[in-house]
Amino acid sequence: MRYSILFFTPALVALAAPGAQIEQIRNIDWEYELLGNKSPLERRARSEKSLDAIFKSLGKQYFGTCADRNLLNNAQNAEILKADFGQLTPENSGKWDTVEPTQGKFNFNDLDFLVNWATTNGKVVRGHNTLWYSQLPSWVSNINNKDTLTSVIQTHVGTEVGRYAGKILQWDVVNEMFDENGGLRDCVFSRLLGEDFVRIAFEAAKKADPAAKLYINDYNTVEKGASYKKTTGMISYVKKWIAAGIPIDGIGAQAHLMTGEAGNVAASLKLLCAAAPECALTEVDIVQASAADYVNTVKACVDIKNCVGVTIWGVRDPDSWRAASNPLLFNSGYSTKPAYGALVQTLGSMTATYKPTSAAPTSVAPTRTTVSTTPVVTSVGTTSIVATTSSYPDATSAACKVATVTETVYR
Image (cartoon, rainbow, N blue to C red; front, side, top):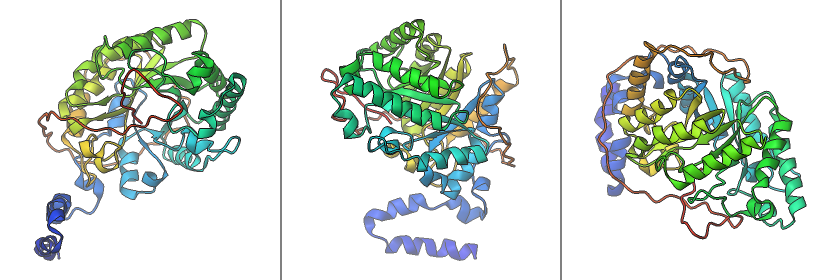
């Protein structure tokens, strides 16, 4: 039967439209066709321990990824989530336009689904996010009264964070609030409230869930180098706010990297992490997913004591918001790419000599369960570095406009 499939595959491709033939050939799972492995886990180059388990053995809290209901209902995607990742971030279901599209009318259906799925499967959750200039309903961006906006922020943040009190490890309370010059982004929040909207949001979150770790999250903070204005600006503001008593627990560096930018991560992340009690890499994806770039990026967190975790922004390339750049650890067939093997090899070798200097941070997440797998070790491949440029989506809304700098807005 296996040979009959191989025999007819070329014929089927030949019948396809000429423009689709190459893509169809590329998408054929030749390993499955030739070897007949029945399980997606058997077809992947799996390590004896999951990436999450290896990462935790280095004193960290989690190695995670993002998803929403559609991908959690995808059996192959869910299988990988259970086997390889220990933390789950909602990609879109926690954002304002989904949670409160109309004032006072909250919709938590998809976020409830994700939190329940994570709890059932022993995963911790990073909440993402309560306040962001993009994916913001027009009823919020059109507010023109300071007191009204203050009340709206307090209600929205308090309601969302409070609903999951005790169930979510970390929250991105404020997301992407800086411009590329290191100042406050021009948006409805900063226009009406100045920088005080940060205090309002963080105090509301702290009141709603005193145990959750509260983060400020942004992009181009490790991507461009330690002296980049956005990086130094974020550090200055965060230090000032923490000194003033604003309950900021952590800095999230998104790390949406172009090829070769991983060389900037270690020095930049070290400075960011020194400005707050803890830090994390929160949305990692790398154009062309170079093995060396992934190793350098993740190792930067390993080498910093208060960097508590890494989140890869998706599982497989076609589901990434940067799909054309093939930026993730799994390909379209849910098979591991060379970067996955390189991480397993590099991080695994570090566990042999790792000596914790202090107890790992205590998690406030639900009780974890162990996912048992029996993977197979295969050799680690390499990938060449390809210089490339990409056209990213511009998610700038009417609520926030940066007049002096053209920016890439990341998810």
